[in-house]
Image 1 (cartoon, rainbow, N blue to C red):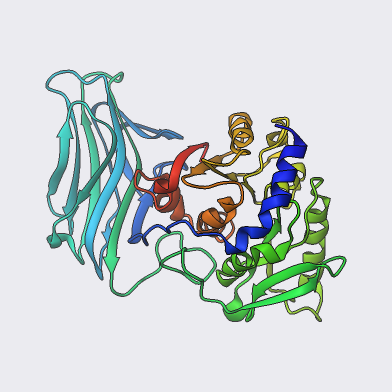
Image 2 (cartoon, rainbow, N blue to C red):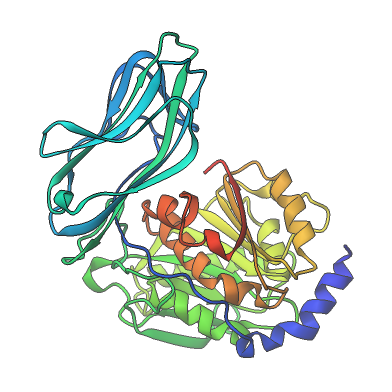
Length: 409
């Protein structure tokens, strides 16, 4: 697909984004009480027998292998659900794996026991578990080390009354629903940046309670500017991010210059953002041409993540510059999605890609804005629980909006 075609389409239609319809937002998820994906080892589980961990999860081999979680405190929680993925391999007749739970250190109650099973499992626990200490155990009874059980993405969610912070709560004030505005009032400066022609959108009370705010530099599509993305820039700033945007170019050099300028603002006593920025938590992202410019400078060493919406690289080589986890968003009615799909194939860094339903080139940012909010809160604000609840679990918050694929996460 030619450069001319992509840019012409953006020029003709991106200016209508502020008036376009909005994709239905997903329902708010229950509170995450506990999650473990074993990517860094067993975490709070302990093991007996032969157990290994890796990108696949936790793998039990042979006779009498088991993993058992620490006590999970359910004080103040009810309507508890346990979910996980599992895959049994090679078990013979008479052999089985078992998933079970116990309360307050008591005996274990079986959730499931089987010889063959693959994929996700989810169980609503009885009300007797509410407010108690819960332990989870996965065990394998088999005769050979070639017979295995692999467990991953263990998740405990519940309804709560006291609304405590979940594990991996992050550095920003907590929110229960990323599809709604965040807790911050927002200020917009439309004459900001290196050449006084960009928009700086930031929390009005930046720095309150010692918060250092992560940074997003956003590139609009061709033929548009920050004004066409105003409500989305405000939404991200309301969640605690300092957002800068100006008319984009495919070179992406303006993004690096904007980041230099923001670092200067953080160091300047005359700036409203003086010493209130987290310059170690930075995202570049954009729509259409803004995405292409993001690819161009994705090897900037100060970056934490990049975001690419409806803007695949023209030659498939854009991912060569990626050094950090990336978010790709396309639409099932978008002419640029084929380029993004090629980029996804060529991407070697961790990446999550969604092709949104009923979404064309222009609607991609609007329909994906809440996905972007959750991604930023995960990767820039340290809300690690979002990895499972919003992106990787079998019933993740954003998995129902379209076709989802991911690797390396």
